[in-house]
Length: 415
Length: 165
Image (cartoon, rainbow over all chains, first blue to last red; front, top):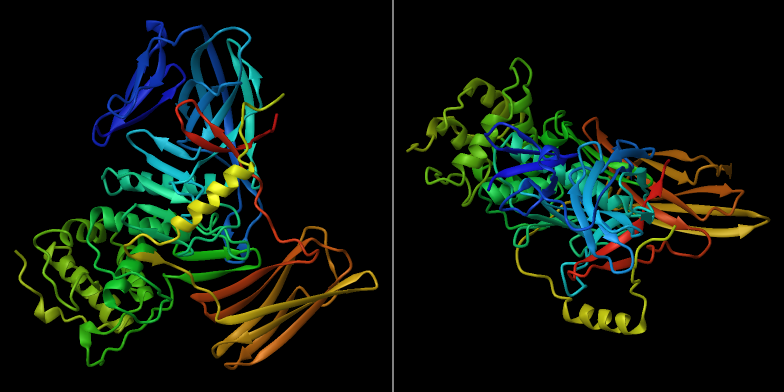
C-alpha cells in the first residue's frame, strides 16, 4: 500500500504517490488518530482503555554541519518522521505511538488510568508506509544481531488529560549523531518519493560513537545497510554528503543496475564499472544535498571535492578508448554538468539522467558497450536511446571538457 | 523526575555472552562493499610532554606522495589558547617522503585537541587528514548504553533528552 501520512493532532492525514491529501478529523467521531500498521496506515480509531490522555512536545537534536573548514558550530534541528512511544514507567508497556512532524513536534492521544507515570521515547526508526528506516548501534557487526535502535527519552511525567513536555533536546553526548543519520536518510527518502516517484525499500544504518565499521563508511547491498564510522579522528555521522553518496548506492541498487565490483576507490582512474557506480553515488548525493561540494569533515578540518569545477580530464588518445580506466569524479562532474549546465548550455535538470539510470540501464533495451557491465559509456548510449538529445552539450561536456573519447558515430541500435 | 525502567547491560554474564558472540560473528558477510574515504596522503605522529605547568605538543607530518601545498591546523577546546606556536602553519609543497614538524605549547592541561593537515590540489579539491590527541592519557570513551527492553522484546538504546523549557 503506497500510502504515507501522519497524525495532525486528532486529524489523520494520508497521501499516496499520485493521490490527493486526505484529512479526516477523528474528534467528532469520539476517536483518536493512530498508526494501525503498514496495511492500514494512519486512521481514526477508538481510544485505548483508561481515561483519554494527551501528551505533546517537540524533539530537537544537536547537529554539527559539515563545512569546507570542518565541523561547524552546534545547531538545533527537528527530529523528523521518527517513531515516538509513550512508555509506562515500571513495565515499559507501550501506551501510545505516533510520529514526529516535520518540525519535530509530536501529539499523542492514548488511554491510561490516573496516577500512571510515563516517558516519551523517540526512536531513530520509522515504519510507516512512506518511510522504512532503522538506525541501530552495531557498526562492527559483532553484536550477534542487527543491533539496538538508538532512542532518546523525555523525563518521566505523570500522565494528565493534556501534558505539554515542551522542547526536548538530544545532545551530541546523548546520541544526536544517530538522529542526524536518521534525518539525512529521511531527506534521501523524500527525494526518492518526490523526484524519482518510487517507493523506497526498507533501509538500515549502523552507527555508534567512537566505533569504526570494518568497511569504514560504506553501503552493503545485500542487507540494504549503510555503515557509518564514528571513529574519533574522522567521524561521519554529521557528514551528510558522505552519507548521501552511500544513499546514492542504495538508490542505484534498488532502482537501477550496477556491475561494480566494489572495493577501494580514491578518484584516480579505475575500473569503469566501479567509477560509474561511485560517480553516480556522488552525483545523486550532491543533488539530494543541493550542493556540488562533497565534504568529509573531521574535528580538525575537511576533505572537499567540488564536482562543479575543474573537470577531471581523461585521455582522449588512450589506446583503450572508451574502455580506458575512468575517474569517478569525471563521471560525477559530467552528470552534474548535464543537469546544472555548463558554459554556453543551460541546465537540463536531473530528470533526464535519472530516466536513463533508472529506466534504461535496468531494462531490456540496455545494450552493453565500453567494458562489460554498466559504465559511463552505457549511460551515454542510454541518454541518446531515451531521446534526451542535446548532442552538442554532451560533446562539449564529455568529449571536450573531460577528454573522454565517447564515440557518437557508433551508437548501438536502440530497440 | 526519573526515567522509565531501563536495564543497563553491565553484568559480567552479559559481557561474556557479548564476547563469545563477537568471535562467532567476526566474518564479513559476502557481497560488494562500497567504501568511500578520501584522506590526505600523509602520516601523522604526535608527541606531548609536560614541563613547568605547560604542555608541549609536536606534530610530525610525513608526506606519502609529492604534495602541492600543505597546511597544519590545531583545533583546541573552547577557551584554550596556545602559549607559544600558531594554530595554523603553512608548510608549502612537500616532496614524497619529506617530513616536517610543527609544535605548539599550551598553558592549560586540555583534555584533548585535534590536529590535521590540509593538502590543497586546486580550487576543486582539498584533502584532509586529522587525528584526535588526548593530553591526559585517557582515550575517548563512548557513554555506557542504557538498554531498554520493551514487553514486545524490542530493545532500545536510550539516552536522556534535555528539557529546554
